Length: 456
Image (cartoon, rainbow, N blue to C red; front, side, top):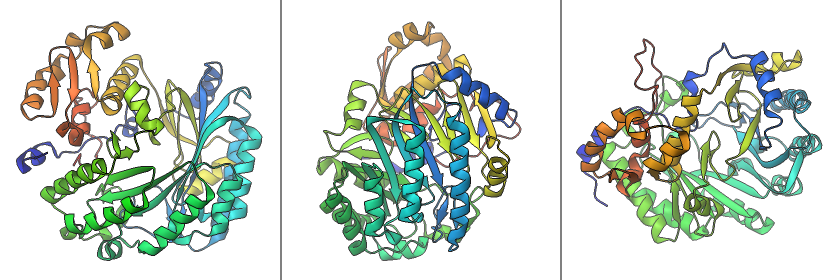
């Protein structure tokens, strides 16, 4: 697959990652605790499953590339106090949830969830299980930082019912690791991965990242050699988003050391070639999995979905998210918790749901969310079927987008026969750009428009 650098420059522009629609910058503080309580009451009889999320924002050290809401600290008492409040928030919320609803998915993210010691991990897991009814087939996953992990942590995850783990690797090259302040040897990664395999987790994912300082095709190819030798079940290869205006610590990265657009493209091409040659199938955006993985099957049968936890097979679940900055979602609303830990702790300590902002999804938003989801997940949209489903004239409703189709066709990103819109192999690299065609908010004239990372 050859891509001209000029094409890359043309489409490298700020744009959303579409983990929601409308995207998070459009959430408003006019949506508060009252609105979220009303939404929770309304949503209890929908028959939808539940996806639980807990945000543990603490890390031992600061990774300069990090885009998450996190706190680097060596003072464990901060995490202990936070955990007390987190348990209390879960208590407050659980009282508002229909006990007959089944939990189909649980995920712990961060920060670093395994920053918690094994005893506290067991405490949090048992507390959540005591308040919610878990399906026997629930997908229970946790993000793991290999650097501070012990075998006791692995056993605590296993004892707590976790069946999936995701190891944060990013890159195995020593120069890259030093530049982003995340030093971890290949030997360490192999040891922790071995613990996970021996423990019998049903799925092990590895997170990698491209676009980091000093990365080259040669150096990252060596990283892929080692990772593919370990043979994880899934791989998420994220593109580094340099947003120092949002994450001040990213100014610690020397911009001159970042790969330019041409090298970023070569890295993307390397990923596609090496992973597909190794037998992995493309899921979407930055995710790959083995052919028998349920995520691959979901993409093929049209049930794959995308939300704040990335790609998921649990399309018909409400997300109940706990902890500072965590984002909850029902079929018709989004809600984000207070982002700053002191404010979060104060709200929970006072017995309030720690709502910072949110949004009620309007009918047109739902329709466009469905369309963007089909592009991001299915890679194909049938205009006539979509129009029938949503009772609209596709060609009239999306006339402005359709006017831009010929250019995208000429550039090789999509195929369009007047009915079927299909993303090409090349177009997968530009998936965010294609979805942006249908984003009504991007077309609005605003004095203070949101700033996004670049699509490439």
